[in-house]
Every structure is written in C-alpha cells, then in structure tokens.
Length: 73
Ligand SMILES: [Zn+2]
Image 1 (cartoon, rainbow, N blue to C red):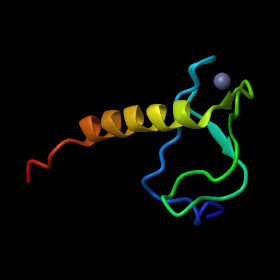
Image 2 (cartoon, helix red, strand yellow; image 1 turned 90 degrees about the vertical axis):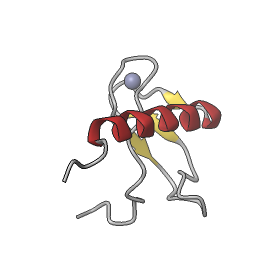
Image 3 (cartoon, rainbow, N blue to C red; image 1 turned 90 degrees about the horizontal axis):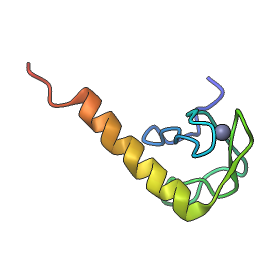
C-alpha cells in the first residue's frame, strides 16, 4: 500500500484533454484533503488548474455516489 496517505474520499478526476481518469500528484495534501501541489494527468500530462480540479472532483464524487447508491439491505 504505497498510497496510504491519500484521503479515501479523493477520487481520480477525468482529464479534460484525453478523457482518462488517472492523476499524478506532487506535494501531499492540505488540511481539506485536497492536493497541496500540482495535479497532472498521468496519460497526457495535462496540468489541472485548481478550480477545474475541484469541479472535476465534485463531478466524480456525484458519479461515484450514483454508482454505489443506497444499499437495499
Ligand atoms: Zn490527459
């Protein structure tokens, strides 16, 4: 487990350029659990701007919540 420091609510965001959802992060995380440094696309190396990253992360969280949904047990 190399990524034990990554907050478990932090989902990889979708790249606006190539559509892949694989991110690289440098510099750890701030008090809000958000990346403190740069976030880049692992595939095409697009650098996410902070506000674009936050928006993409919110979208991903909504998608993820919709996928898991309420448990029917
Ligand atoms: Zn990309």
